[in-house]
Amino acid sequence: MALEAFDYVNGIFSVILVIIFIFVGLRIALRYRKIKEKTYLFVGLCWILIGESWYPSSTSFIIALFNDGLGLISFPEIYFIIGTSLLPFTLTFWLIAFTELMYKQKQRIIIMISTIGGILFEIFLFYFLLTNPSIIGTLESPVDANYGLFISVFQILLLIVLIITGTIFARASLKSDNPEHKLKGKLLLMAFWLFFIGAIFDVLSTFNILFLILGRTMLFFSSVFFYYGFIFPEWMKNRFLKPKNP
Image (cartoon, rainbow, N blue to C red; front, side, top):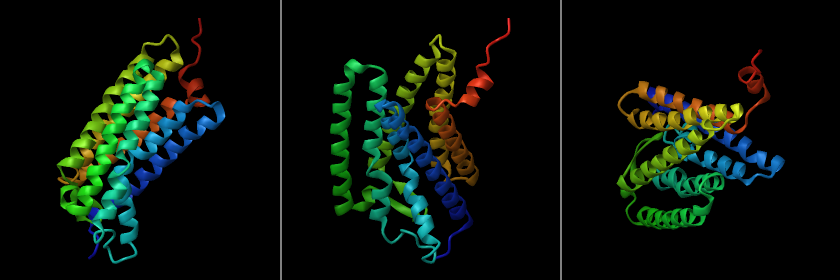
């Protein structure tokens, strides 16, 4: 089967997006080696894994270029494992980082709930993959899947937790008297909300290619703002935090 124009746009954008997520996540995670602050490690790992939903489409697209446009369409179980099996880790890594910075006294119970939920998710995921993969979803094309209720609910839950906790963290930074922290807060607030809106547009992309392009663009800028929100470069300090002349 030949890839259609929409498949090429979807696949190319997926590959670009995955590269950006991995690059940004690695850059943040590797900062741990320099300053020994484990929050950066977990934030970086979270951002690498938060792009998991686009891992299978990018992988399948690349494979499709060499196997007559089939990609992973003959192996839906592999597609779904690549795209869903690490979602609980994304949630847990982010909550570890978040509770290191805020609500430290509640960290143990929050991480325990997240871990138990993650274990249950993995059990049901692989059970359904072995017994009835259609519950997990169906492949509409080599680069696009229609996920079932089980995965969709978990993805929505992950998105809700991310936007709520991300907004709480960003707003706390905005209340700081430190101008640098305030600017970081603005960048992170834009990052979380762009990711949230971009993910919604990405879901709607099945109806119109414009939604796909717009959604992926938002997700790209979300990663950029997220990166600068944690790795604040000198040029940005000089550009936006210049001391005011009396």
